[in-house]
Image (tube, rainbow, N blue to C red):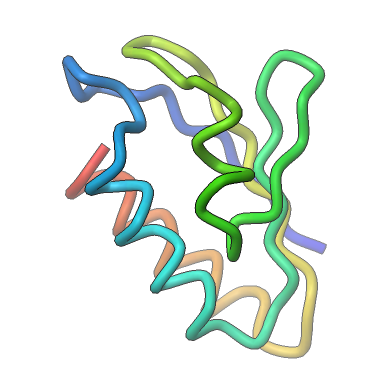
Amino acid sequence: MEKFDYIIQDQLGLHARPAGMLVKIAQSCGSQIQVLMEGKTADAKRLFALMSLSAKKNDRLTFMVEGEKEHEDCMRLKTFCRENL
């Protein structure tokens, strides 16, 4: 399992558009991807689960990636976060 933290930079936080884009990337990955924030956990492949985190600017998200191509999937997610969150 690989994991990384990301602090949201977007003024609007994890709102619908980037959350939907994140779900699409997660669904294209073969790995299982969980997002943790302040004791809550969400499946990154489910939009409503991600939205339920109510992540705002400066909130820390922890991504946990587990699967055969977890390193590649983790790198894709890191790139996405830097470019969109």
